[in-house]
Length: 350
Image 1 (spheres, one colour):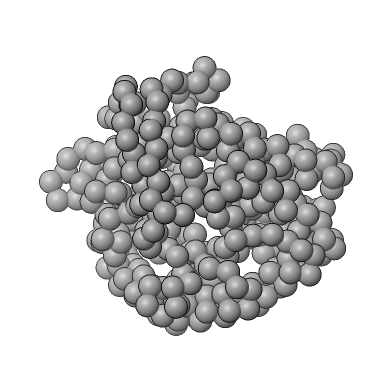
Image 2 (cartoon, one colour; image 1 turned 90 degrees about the vertical axis):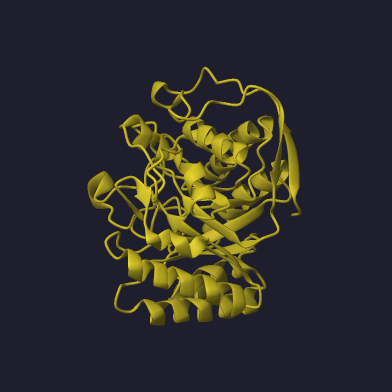
């Protein structure tokens, strides 16, 4: 896709938004008049997943520039002070807390779009975290057979993307599942169950393309330095006719072995792109918050290798929840902010 120019109409807050998610950032007013938004989709993607953002704001978290401590909205801070051009947002089906449901995601996507940032939507197809250990079918879908699950996937994708379309927001990338090393929507969508996983992927793929034909559909796995995972899942999709446009990877290198892990990841990027003919996105990367200098070195090396050693097949890098304070949400310690300001780790994106 080339540079997009979108004329945004006056933003009207949806009455269906939950109470916790009805307000914009406390220091950013919603747009009040038409303005042209120019989004450059031609460059290397440098981004962050900030899905916790509205929850953090509701809890009183504020964000500052590092040098002069000027309070700044988080996405604008990532854009202006950290050199990022993209935002990734996860979607849960019916989360108990309400955070990361469709309404919350639409709100954050509008804020990113208004800043001229590119948007990635990450469908987990669960009411909570979907990852290598958890691919729990949403409670409302628990009794569905595989055909009903396909319909539910398509409907869920269509519901969110239609709302984005109505606001003039065009996601550049859409993930169908999150870290699906064993498939998704277990047990029926486990990759061991014949072509079930591929059929669910295709239901999501077709729903995306019906609304945004140019959006890149991503299949995302963890452990980007482990080629066998990718051979297994993408081999399954090849066998059963699974449709996708891009391969997504997560990579969380250790402080002491990061260079060998990055080298292995870059080797895997070259291997899978050659085997399956698809470009690759690093959808998640992170390192311990108290290792900012090492994280900066790692991210700088990763970015350089992805841009220069993959023949252009790696299209970008997203840091996972850099804005989260240390220990957030029960112990997440791979953020890249300190005292509300970005650390030196994120200078690698400039």
